[in-house]
Length: 230
Image 1 (tube, rainbow, N blue to C red):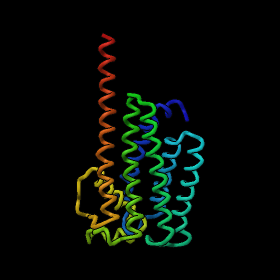
Image 2: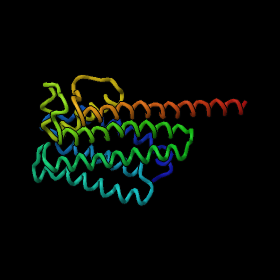
Image 3: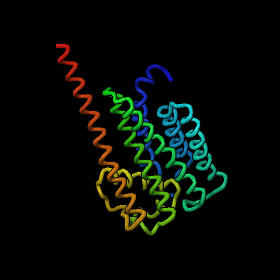
Image 4: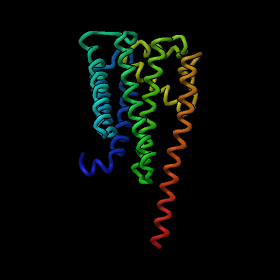
């Protein structure tokens, strides 16, 4: 990894995450997911893999997960499968493992380094966005097993029937869970949906505290430096 990219890796990842999530939100509609959406998702996860995972053992393990998820996702173009197939479940599960692996590494490195550089703050924000995709994958798995535990607005039910539409819908829903906004587009009715909603909200609140602490530490570090310079 180049020197400039190494110094600004989380800034680059944040930009890619925002672009990728925006593209997914606008480009994915029911039954028209398309190869472009899959390529964008695979490219985003490849960037996460290269930027987040630096330990050789972690890279080897997550490389297997990444390749398996990509192969399963792209295989539907050769062997069609709907969003309720076993292949879809495999994709959602692998997706969840990959995303939560990235969140774990980011949080571990933040606590291990305990630095107060702007890059650490950006890393924490990246972790938050990736966690949204992680919760989305878990909700997708829960919906696959127990769809009746979710109530979905009738205007959005066509998204649920599509592989890509479900990804977009549950990413939106999971970010709302973490932010505790509580839109009624998707409503958890009972476990496991309600359980995931509870833990996603708690995670979002505590994670926000981590990000705020990073900002406070950065501000204090800057103030201290200014006093010393004076």
